[in-house]
Amino acid sequence: MHEMSLAEGVMELIAEAARREGFARVRTVWLEIGRLAAVETEALRFCFDDAMTGTLAEGARLEIIDLPGQAWCRQCQAEVALLDDDGICPQCGGFELRITGGDQMRVKELEVE
View 1 (cartoon, one colour):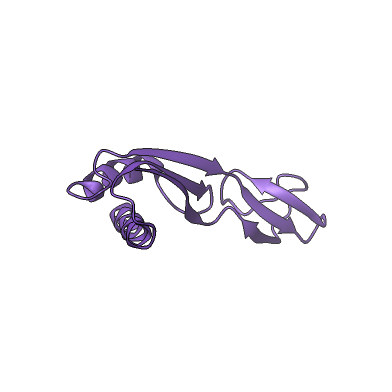
View 2 (cartoon, helix red, strand yellow; view 1 turned 135 degrees about the vertical axis):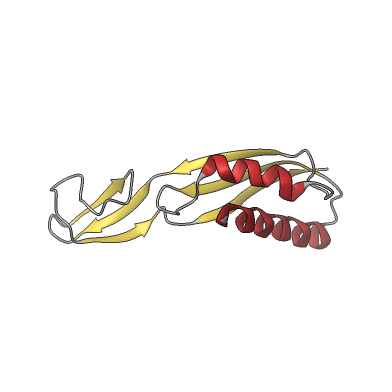
């Protein structure tokens, strides 16, 4: 399951931040996840709880910020929001899209003690 490796990667980022910043516990983790990032958020929630067990983030709340996809349409020359990755411009129906955002996942913020 790809979401487990993502959750483990988040834990590594948290551990690195704890070493650098000197905090001992994480209460909340905010993740920004783009709609085009190929992340199943419910599976990630399940894996997050498991990956955080026995760590300084055990019991931490996971908040997911859903970001729309963004693309530039060559046909209509517009920046458009994408709700999925079907490859069709929602403005003109064209198929010449260049993804410009919403295809990433990042730790946006941590609430720590």
